[in-house]
Image (cartoon, rainbow, N blue to C red; front, side, top):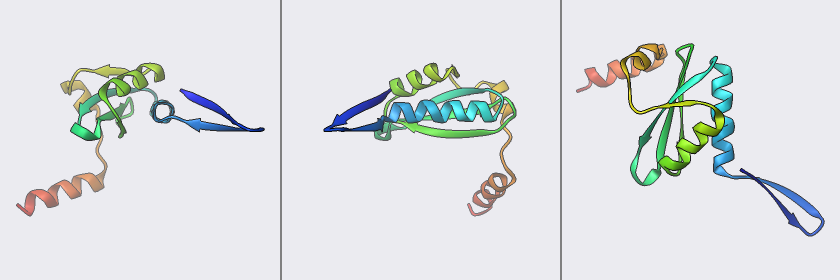
Amino acid sequence: MVLLMADGSDTTLIETPEATLISGIKEFAAAHGGATAVIEYVGRRGARIVLVGTDGGWGDLVAPTTQVARAACEQAGVEVENGWERELVELMRPSNDLWRSMSKRTLAR
């Protein structure tokens, strides 16, 4: 949703968080040949939208609520999975830096 607000003779374009989410989801999907989303509730912070591209790339965005997250994915044309299905997890390709950081956390325990 994009709002146009008139202030005297000036017109100001204000992007709402939903519009920012939708454009971010569309950009990710375009850059990765399509995408699938998983929405995770993260308490007071809202909802995390984890996007998995068809090329294995992944990223995430934060929405104020799970309803806003679902609506943004729907408007962006991205399918939302109900959970982490095996096929979706196997598609993800973590970067070498992420693998290194995860191994350091395991070794530090």
